[in-house]
Length: 396
Image (tube, rainbow, N blue to C red):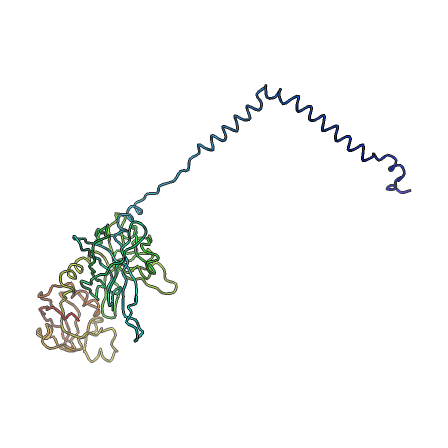
């Protein structure tokens, strides 16, 4: 016999019956019920259940007395945004449809603008020229306090291609805030900068991005012949932000967002027109509709763009490495009256060296109409000067 064998008859004779098991359960239940009936009144008199009830009531009271708290976050940035945000509006360029059989007007583009003046029933908005360029009409979208907006027609008072600025006039109904201009000449690299505008259109109206002033002053080429001074910032500026506000922590507009460098692998290169440079342009656009500028009446060509063989024909000394070649001189212009000739090479204006045509125009446009400037130039390899009395250039 193995160790795991057993006697089946023995276990069958010893197994209790099912009836005995049921009877045992009934007896146990009766005894348990009697014990409960006897001891519950005793425990109640001792205060056991009262104590538990009081603990439950206290816990319930503590839960009902709990409060929901909220944290109010205020900072220089939020205060600055609240101060100027309502003055930043949307600008819509409305043009004609490309369909030759349709007379419908279509939205050609959107941008941003800044309400900077309010007089009785009129308000003035500054924006970028490229936002309204080629328009048939212009609309301004004014934000309202109930998260809605109001679209009004705008009149173009004036624009300037060179500085990329335009001034619009709208009805002042619904205008609640007017932006305050700051001092862009006092900016420092590293101070906070806040960009407010409508990136990608009205669905993201009054978006706020924050960064720093990367450089208070950069000179960049905006066209092949013109350069301009701008504020560089790393605050995100996207299509639709053009014409919006660049704001300091005091809630003052220090720049008008204008452009960004959008190349693969390039981030954080946004630019704004300094407000100190923009203000005199804005005043001229309000009063005259354009910006009167002095001109010479010449066609220019950068010396650095010329072939070495052409340098030899000009007979320039080796010390001259930069300058501007005069290709032609228009008749009856300030340059012609001063004796300036074709093939002259300008190297300085009022003693300020000019390396290319962009620098020459930048310096020239800062002069007053009717003032005199002295050109330092080379003619047939010889250094000479010419004094030009500046006249107002044609608007074109």
